[in-house]
Structure formats: structure tokens, C-alpha cells
Amino acid sequence: MPELPEVETIRLQLAKLLPGLKIKEIRVLAEKSFSGNGKDLFGTEITGLRRFGKMLIIDMDKDLVLAVHLKMTGQLIYGKSQKDKLPDKYTRVIVSFTDGSRLFFNDLRKFGWMRVFKKSQIGEVIGKIGPDPLETNSSNFYKILESSRKPVKLLLMDQTKLAGVGNIYANEALFLTKINPKKEANKIKRSEVDSLLTNLKKVLQQGIKFGGASDKNYLDAYGKMGEMQEHFLVYGREGEECVNNCGETVKKIKMGGRGTYFCPRCQK
DNA sequence: TTGGTTGTTCGTTC
DNA sequence: TGAACGAACAACCA
Image (cartoon, rainbow, N blue to C red; front, top):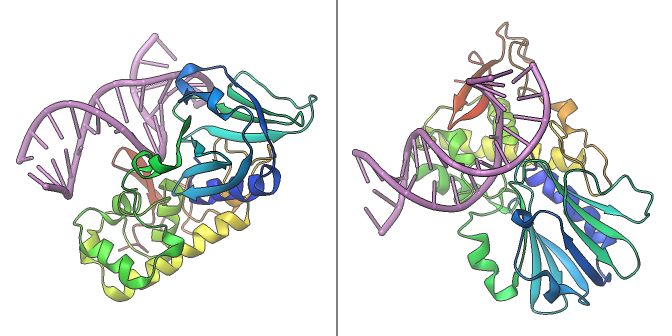
């Protein structure tokens, strides 16, 4: 599932590939996956890429942007050659450039989307998302936790409170900090809150360093898998020995309908 | 075959 | 007013 590190990996890669390219045509293969008028972008040039939480914004030289949300199974793959294996059966949108290269939006489950809108509308489209955890300091983070009685894991994943953290990195950060995912956010001590933010930044940065987590079907902008899944400490490790060698095995429970992995002995 | 999976949105309840 | 919670969405896999 593309979370902050996966989207950031794609952003960093596309930022080296796309600026300066001019859009020739956009082919929408699945109506559900695209909204806004794609023709408005024909002939416009890409000027840069931004990320807001898990959302990617492709800026154009007109007053328009092309926004992408990958949701759970989206991929954004850039191809220079017609010999690429793309499009495939999950390609929903193809953006062609005047130099002959193409950007493929693949999405098995069609939850993700591409959307054209004006720069002035960015605020309303992105909605009220919280600060980026990588840009957040300890006192801001403390205010966020202090103001909610939700289980801390659900709070970390609440995009209106903090932008970009999903299931994988929330599980990993709580394990590193030895905090039980069910613990009420406002009951966490200041010292633990500081350490949680440090660890959250650590796993997110590690995720970026390893090119994201290809746990399910995530691929980067070159169509390559990330390696972060090889470094998971609890996520997906149900029944395995806790890596702290505490003698307990990793348990899986459901929180907010999502799989939650933790060590009941280490995470109090 | 049917239920599990999963990020976000939306509707309902408290 | 808004926090909290659950269903819905789509398609595959076990």
C-alpha cells in the first residue's frame, strides 16, 4: 500500500524524469479512474512535482495540476520505450508526451484516481489534512496526541491529524517505541511521545531510503520493487518470534478494520 | 464459493 | 459542532 515513503519515492524519481515534458495526449481506459477534463492539459508542460500526504501533485505551466492518489493498488510507471510491458490489463490511464515517452497509471482495484483541477483548488481537493510527520516538531506532535482519546494507532493513520502515515509505518513505529497500538493517544507520556515521533520519522525515512515497501503490488516509477518489506520488524509477522527476543510471538488484531501487528509483551 | 483484504469517503449515531 | 464508527467501494486470492 503506497504510504508516505512510497509516494515520496515516486515523486523523487518522477521529479528527475517529467519536468520539461509536454503532454501530447491522455488516454483514459477506465472512466472511474480519471476526472476533470484531460484535454485541458494537452500541450501543457510539466513544471514540477509536489506531495501532500499520500497525494501526488503534478504541476503544469498553466494554472492547472494533475493530481494522483494511488490508494491501495495504484502504480505510476514511466516508460520511454514502446517495448515496455505496458500497458497491461490494469492500466487505467496513459499520459503520452511529445517526445514519445509515456506515464502509465495502473490500478488493480480502481480505488485510486487521477484528477485535473486548478491550482487555486488544491486546498479543497486535498481537504483538511494534517501536517507531514517529517516536517513536524515534538511540541506539535504532542498537541496532536494530547487532543484525542482515540487509540494511538488510529490517530497516527488519521490523515486529518497527520498526513501520509498508513498501516505499515504506524505498526512499525509503535513497535519501535514499545507502545501498545490500542493505548489512548492522550495517555501517552511526553517522553514517549518524543520517542514515538523520532521513531516514526526513522521508519518513514528508512522507507524512502529502501525505495518503499512492495508488500503487495507497489512498484516505483521505473516499475521496480522497493525493499522496505525486507526490513519490517512486526508488520506481516503474525505468529513469528518477536525480534526483541522477549519470548513472545507477534500477534495480529483488528483495529478500525485493519490488520494490526504487535508484541503484547514489549508493547505496553 | 465465500470471506478476507484495505485507504478513503460518506453516512449515521452519540 | 464534531468525534467515532462502520459500510461501501473493486478485484483478487485463499
